[in-house]
Length: 352
Image 1: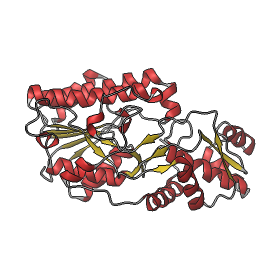
Image 2 (image 1 turned 30 degrees about the horizontal axis):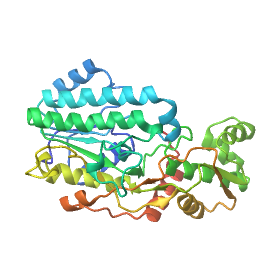
Image 3 (image 1 turned 45 degrees about the horizontal axis):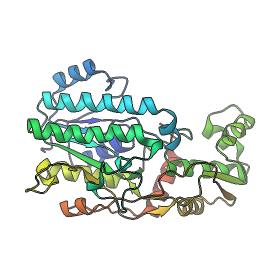
């Protein structure tokens, strides 16, 4: 890519997209196209077609998606499969039509089977059934991978798919109803700490409610009070977490240095599983994660694990050796990353 190449980042305000934009700008890229959802509805094929015809981006980063945690994924199943398929279909197809030089499609490691061998290599895709709670989202992302592969093989496009592990970082979603586990734990434990310290005005301000009674009633739905924080499941599941700015650096590295032809063995009879894991290869239990966040925030109450709630997949660790072999490895360690994102949250108090 040239520093003045026109680069369209779909989903530029989210956790993933904002980190990628920041990385691109830090490296001197000056022609980045950004559109909010109000400006461009990516589920609308006509609007996407008109946008691509007008802008003609040279490079596309598809970071726009409907995302959420275990509750949102399991509750809004139709929304997750419909909206993600629509976004992918429109952006990937128009990238082909308008002869985009390279597209980077971002998915998630939830594409892998529930009982995938650990750590998960790219070639375990589609080898057995998915985790039920996020099956619609996972199927949409698998379709995106296969769409990129198929367009590359049939039309000679240069579309690369990357599957980041669990991400956290600036511009994360801290909404208690839809957030992923790490930001949800940070906000729940932080609010419990404020209640414990009787800093009620800060609780009311954080939740944007009228009074303390409303705040306590709302937080009770999530098992949060001044003495304890409820966490779904046993705490035994292990998860891998990658700082979003590390993920962005990996994405820009691949855009600058690697092509679709680098994602598979040259003598392969069947070209498949060309996607690339982006992860650390290191995991932590949810209980250990919660204890770490509790220590960083300074909450003195209890953590209560509600075993009547589902755990989700017990083990979910990526094998990032393919990415390592392509020339990139993560830099930010988990405790340092949590401290950084907690301080960001305290400063910004923005929920997406």
